[in-house]
Amino acid sequence: MNALYASFWALALSFAGMAALAFAMDRHYEQLTGRYELPAAQRWMLRCVGTVALAAAVFPCVAAWGATVGAVAWLGWISLAALAVVGLISAAPRWAAGLAWAALLAGAPAFIWGA
Image (cartoon, rainbow, N blue to C red; front, side, top):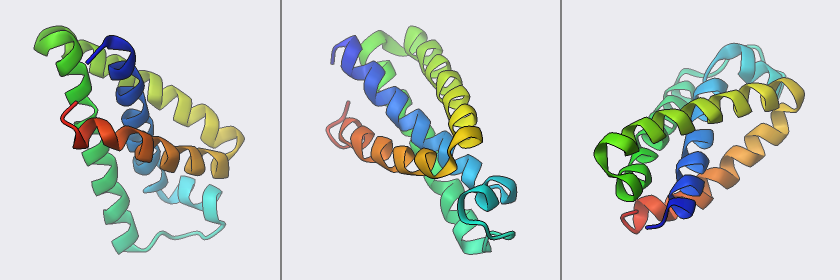
């Protein structure tokens, strides 16, 4: 896997994971839906999706750069994705949710095809 594809897939999965974790919080869920309280089952599902997406983002990084540099690159992509999620949720939460779904679907091939 070349570095460009690894970067794209790692960023896509990191963005989807961070967005899912953010929307698992009552504050951001209210921004997205207008409802004050997030159902427990939905909160649990969003946390699981976010955790799995963030964990899956490490595979393209390790495949492209090896374990040591890949781990550092993974942390960098997670940081960049967190900044993007914070900015986008503040400006347009519905766009953030839509982009997170698109990023999850775009990043899934990296996990399915073994990075």
